[in-house]
Amino acid sequence: MYVLGIETSCDETSAAIVRDGKDILSNVVSSSIKFHSKYGGIVPEIASRMQLETITQVTDSALKNAGIKTRDIKLVSVTNGPGLLGSLLVGISFAKAVSFTLGVPLLGVDHIYAHIYASALDRQPIPLPFVSLIVSGGHTSLFYVKDFDRIELLGATQDDACGEAFDKVAKILGLGYPGGPLIEQLAKKGNPKAIKFQCSGTQGALNFSFSGIKTAVLYRVRAQALNRQAVCDIAASFQEATTDTLVKKSLLACKMKKTARLVIGGGVAANSCLRDKFYQQARKHGIALHFPLKELCMDNAAMVAGLGFRLFKKGHSSGLDLNAVF
Ligand code: KG4
Ligand code: ZN
Image (cartoon, rainbow, N blue to C red):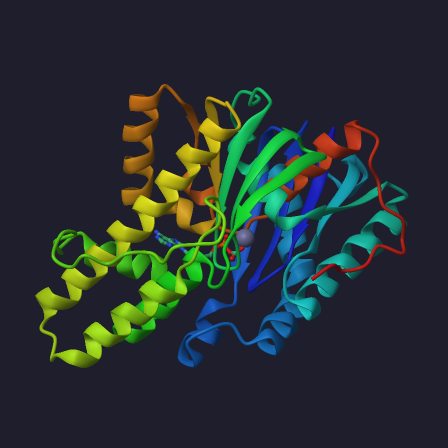
């Protein structure tokens, strides 16, 4: 069964064709990031206008790359939240139009849950239940997944998301946007033990806090003139502290839920330092670990199509009154 996935929750415009919730036939992602860079973050109005301009072309490319015709599509799956309202509405309106015109079902899916599903694409199905850490620019959350329509929130960030902290620290260090990949590059040349940064304590053991460490970096930068090596050391020490917390709390969640299976997702999951630490600790604790392919960590429509298939097979669908949840 061919599913058309549409994803427009942030700055990306993405369309994908996925077969049977597993095989990615195409996954086209167009980003408006270069139009936002000079503002140091996403400008919602620019994002939605670019999405309106590109969505038809992106979907045409997805169909062409997959080598299928519009009549082969049997379900339209679209992100309906959380995200930027204007951006979500572009994707939802487009998905409704395609569903109505082709006479095929429509399904709105949760963007964060789609990130959880990303690890199941182009792979063997992931046995249930499992603990999942989603770590992106907008969210840092731990879930207990009994099934893709039975997901329990275990903990979340109390302030900034982890990716957001990477972006803000990059801004403080005078780097570009998005900050995650730039910090990762600099950190390779830095000493992760140079500065003992720490993530703040949280109310619940499975919650996160990243705004304190971001402020600690800011004070450090203000306190002294930094040469190139000092900037690399800050990047490496910041990355060390944040990734340590993510690993520690995820392992704790597995222990609390008595689950030896962990699924990671979201943009920060592309970080090699994070991946290495998780693999090392998972081996030590006998935990089966699932990471998405690196290109599926960031926002993309393949994960939306995949999750849509899975939920549709379980009897879920949406009406043409589907609205954005942001
Ligand atoms: O999942 P995503 O594409 O969008 C959201 O749903 O938010 O995640 C984007 C976030 C950005 O904050 C970006 O800086 C971060 O993921 N990111 C990374 C890396 N690549 C992307 N953070 C750390 N290391 C990376 N290599
Ligand atoms: Zn995302």
